[in-house]
Image (cartoon, rainbow, N blue to C red; front, side):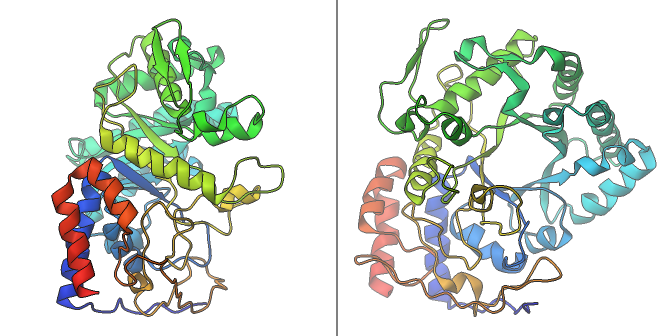
Length: 420
């Protein structure tokens, strides 16, 4: 099992560069979150993940549990957290005492130092067509919310659940979006809960899976936000040039059809794998770079979707790290923006040096970690800075200046060139 070491101290000058560059990148992705999964035995310790997350400007994290090590590590950072309560707890937390104990131990204990803003109860429960799960979902959500109320935390922490896009019976054209008829009786009370408590509707949307299942019919450029002719929704006369926005608007249409037109929608998962099996079309570093890189650009534009142009795109990219112990096809283990050693899985104009992990020592999150000690040496390509959390190429600087303004980016670029 790898041992954890304390994070190494940086010079004040290096920290200044980190803070400035991190702030500028944060301005680009202030509406974007990241999913922090931990189904792996070779991930860095949460303490070492903090500077990595801060260096790329991520201000929102979604966990699949309420790992106390992660929540403590991010105390006093200001990063917003969605914490998860797994499907296996749905029956247990219907007991008010159990729900209150869970909230006290996993949420209240970390407030206000750690900025926990939401609990998602159950993940893609309705996808399994398991009535023992689906029948327990809303009572569990209500019980957790009641616990928050009793502890006077309901104004700062909301309760929701995450759904798969497969709960839609129709998603194209977007204006025809509708929930599965067999789920309507289950979904409607949940939507009433959201409306009454002010919590968002979470949906996991993956254009990748649509392309993977039918690569001959689904245009790759359409799913990767690349220039393409797009499609016209005859019901609204709105034009769509990417699948993700079409999927989001299909969800809005489905909600409106049930009378919940004003319910906010957050994309709790979306991403693209950088590696897959032979039969997993499109799972390459190049496509992952295009999908997530172009997604960041769209988020920065703050234009919303064609149906909701004024709505914020609250999107959580999946995922922070590749997770080597996830079951299923190879793609499932390769959705990460980063490898476990902190080096980028592929470049989206941003690279992180091994300084992010101190001396490179990684700690295992499982009891049988085989990762050992890792000291990554990641050479920067010609024309880039070779040290520091951010190594921003000249091309990336030029591109980003169009989004966030020329002067701040050039200040960072010149400062880094001067020092490094």
